[in-house]
Image (tube, rainbow, N blue to C red; front, side, top):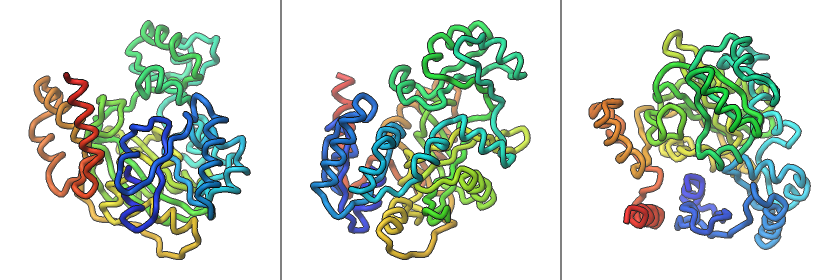
Length: 370
């Protein structure tokens, strides 16, 4: 939805695709819509549908990816897709490294970019021994190197283990997905910082945004429900150095956790595509999707780097309910909540110029509540 709105308001025609025909992004007034098969459940069928769409549209439209599984599904037939579409991201030879958490960590270590303490035991190894040998401290988390199936099965980004017994139990559940075991960096949700950018085929940053989360759902290991724009050029430079090492081209989010003990930024992950709160960058004057589109069609423009701070973004449907619960439980304060929604603030779904997605979202919530 953030991509469709960012492009549509610049006069770019957009077609949204999803395997779920009622996906919220498909209801935006800024796009047409076309249902494709699920890239995770039927990768071949997904690419067939995508190629058919490209043939119908003609003139090699620009392709935007919003999920890792779509990028991975395209990879074996990359040449076919690139013949029908302009594909503004790294070829699979480079992307396969970026999409894998192990590849990200190797690149980070090569340039001295901090990473959390990590162990990668073999499937038949004892994870408790791996944690001990790596010198990791509990709590730890289990996260897949690359496995979108993990998120669909567990409905979570990671699995947490507070002690050795919990680790052994969670390892049995997670081991089919080749997980890493990582030490948890201390600090709250507001310690998660993001570089969001578009880099051209030569690795030149053409649009750069920085900001941090204020609150996640679920807390600690979830997705953003409130975030804030804060321009940090030194942080941006460090993250672009990592993307240089990965030889990355395209839209990406580099997420780190800033350790409150020493201020160092530890790599959480590189998402090699758009991210949830990209519309905040657009509101700050850094229209990442439009920069990507113009570069893909060969329309010259000046790079955008630097932006106002203090603007905020929320997903009200999650943020209001979750905040009320946390304030009652004493895990957050009313003052912090008030700051998170202080103007200037935008919502990721609610927009008077594009009202249908919000109407659909709240109608669904009402039906579930009933």
